[in-house]
Amino acid sequence: MSATGHLRDGQRRRRPARVGVGRGLKDTFANYAFEHQEIAAYTSLIAMAERIGDTALVGPLRQSLSEEGSMAKFIAGQIVPTAARYMDLVAAGEKAKV
Ligand SMILES: [Fe+2]
Image (cartoon, rainbow, N blue to C red; front, side):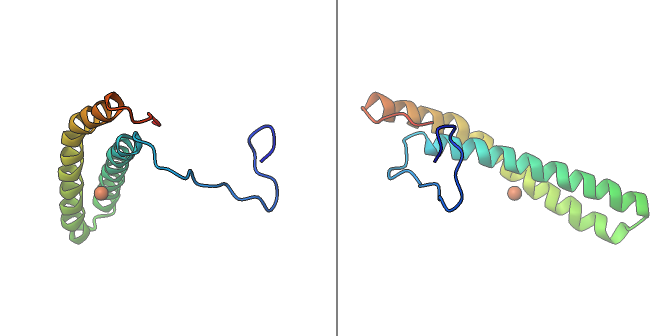
């Protein structure tokens, strides 16, 4: 890796040898964001299907949108417990790597 942090040709970025204690928290953030990206995508697809009059597609898309909303709610419910677990691990001496 160069001094600027960019990889030169042929170099591969190494993965950290140890997964940090903040990994679960970061994954929760990413999963929450991803579910909302999917919600936006399905909302957009429904609008497009309605605009072209493809009524057969709207039902399954709405079903998928509903499922994504349920998953987003589930993940939202994991944020506080995951943050608490993170704090517990840090308090127990684990190194914080968020
Ligand atoms: Fe999803």
